[in-house]
Length: 440
Image (tube, rainbow, N blue to C red; front, side, top):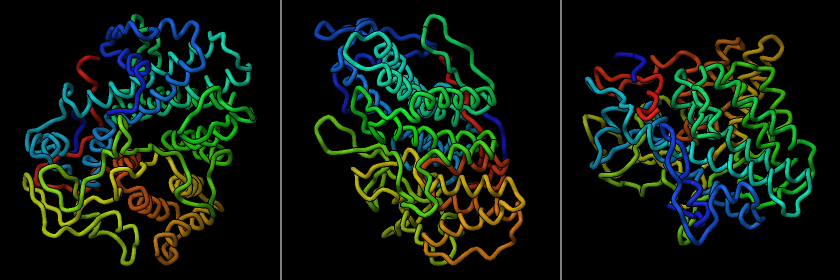
């Protein structure tokens, strides 16, 4: 093995116009529509209906090109294979087959990169619209709406970071003619967390409704802050700020004894113009499909009910010298929702932070890990109650609890364990990050 650093849609007409005004090296001119106001007009004096259209379009655009993002993380992280008869790069470039490397001008990085920054562009317009609108909203509502937009920005930038890693992200992208610099890895995470914290100042204890309707988590600012804090907990563990993660959890929807599926989700439907779940393929599909990396099944504990996330195929499928007997089956229909962040991840963040803090905190880590194990039909943890042992157990539980949700590659990278990911073919690579898109 060589382990190296190598490098739809339910959108209103107005929102669709705005969403194409994103930067890519970094400027694309917006389309002109004589029947709708331009982004500049909306930024200066938007009506409440125009603001609502922008929010609706933004939340829909958040789902754009996410299949590429999840395939990037899932394939490199060896959660699953993405078999495609139309494009061999899913099994060559992403898995580092032979001399294949990651290309900086190919769909698997350019599409998710541009899509996430479209959302950032939309939220910048939303912030201007809320700041300058003469519509009848209160100052607390205005602040809450802007905080909502900043929370979404932070989420989208974190997804860019997850792919780019040491290449960093641009945070200051409001002026396409004067873009801010790419920040370092540590600076990127700090800037994303700062954005979340700024937003939370105007969300937490602000018991007002947004001046628009959101489908993400809640329309109440104070309740929406729980989603904000959940994201802050995730960023804090990426920063190895264990105390900060616990503080963020205490103000999130984290509940050690609660529903593990409580959280914020992308939603899908068969309604006209809406999107379908991009991770769903029917069982026993051929040609275009996702199948489980075999070690997900072979390395599971006996009786783990989370193996229902894969399904035994009628016959094995083979492509490019890769074979699997199991379909990726996290999502059972084409309208299943996909988590943005949920309580099961938060319980595991709690366990991780407690294990990392050590000492008396180790007992709390065991309690949290047993919540996860018991929910999966497994007996209580009987291994060593030491920091290294509990971190190993935590990573194993994250693998099975968060399977197919885009975490395994990130987890193994942040613990410098990429070399432990299974190798699919002799000579395959495990990449640590994607190259910065050529246009950047």
